[in-house]
Length: 370
Figure 1 (cartoon, rainbow, N blue to C red):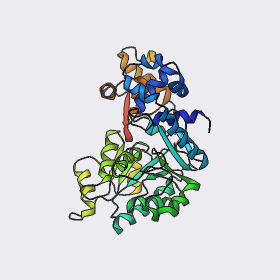
Figure 2: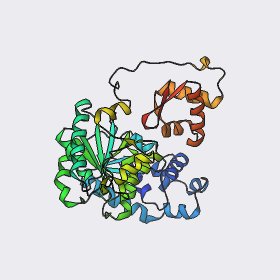
Figure 3: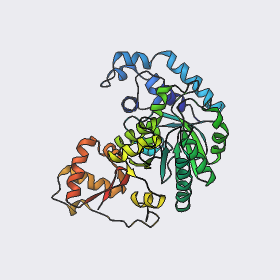
Figure 4: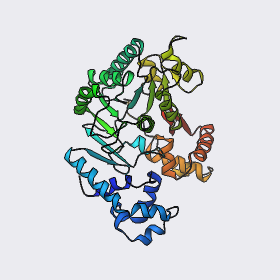
């Protein structure tokens, strides 16, 4: 790890700085170090950077806290994933509220070709756990490189992690605290077992307690770094439903396991399905089909499209065609960033292209040339 990581960590120590501000600061200043040591007049010239925020950026306590965390990271051989780095989860980087920095311990690629999140109630029943075990086993048979993400909590979360380990799958636990502890402590051995083919991942620095509000922040990472979120059991109120709502806002696919009417631990899942906020989950085979993965191992047939083929297209539609022609299928948030176009406007353009049968919508908020 280089000294550059120190200044990347320091960006997270500034009150009021998220990814949007971090991007603006890096564009204007040229590097992470320059944000803290460059000409202050350059900082003052950045739009929407207030004097109060500049005072926070240049406060000596910021670098002091960053140095303390940097020492902790080096001592414990952690990885630092800055939002512009290649090892940062690319699906999460597409989300507007993605963390500036993630810390991890373990040995895995956070950008597997297929990643799903499995979440559910802490008060899981045998029905939910048995389905989880069978579902993960069937998925592993078809996609041995798939990655399972969850939150290391009691119930469905820990069942998902253990099912992944039993089937030699990579599994990532997103934590609501720093990497100087494991919560709950009873899951410590499972957390250790994950490190050879998985990771413990968090946005929180050391000495951060697992406070209630941190779990809600943690849930957006669980939702954002996956192709799909699967809710196996949930009462009518619970953290899993928050994760499902966030996943929907990120245009991720959401699936829910139905249960019998009257079963308290299925009320939340049944409501997600009834409200059309989740697809009914029946089996791994059906899930694979609904995700469009049934033929995903087949070689992609290249479909080169030249700009001159569509001379009649409006400029915004042509830009979308060009982007998809260059890169292949893209998630709508990533396409929005690439084209520097608000998602709300981009959806209207994509709809026009779908009606012209030039673009097709895919699961997980993905779009490709038709």
